[in-house]
Image (cartoon, rainbow, N blue to C red):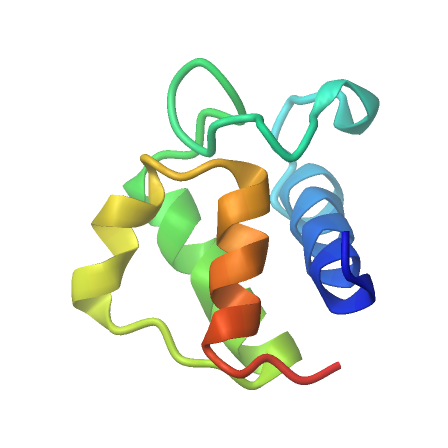
Length: 89
């Protein structure tokens, strides 16, 4: 996994667990873990908060219309999409 993708993945897990107080075990989450049900289980409001934090930290944009489809992605896919949007460390 490229370094920036790994940094974003780690940022997502740390944010969800430590700052958003989501009850998951980070060491049980993989890049294949779904963001929505059956995985990290983020609801719409949590996805909005997470994308806002990604926007601030990595200088990317997630238009409102892109938020809902994120729930169908995996952790690894969100990290990759963030890189594709021009994320900077």
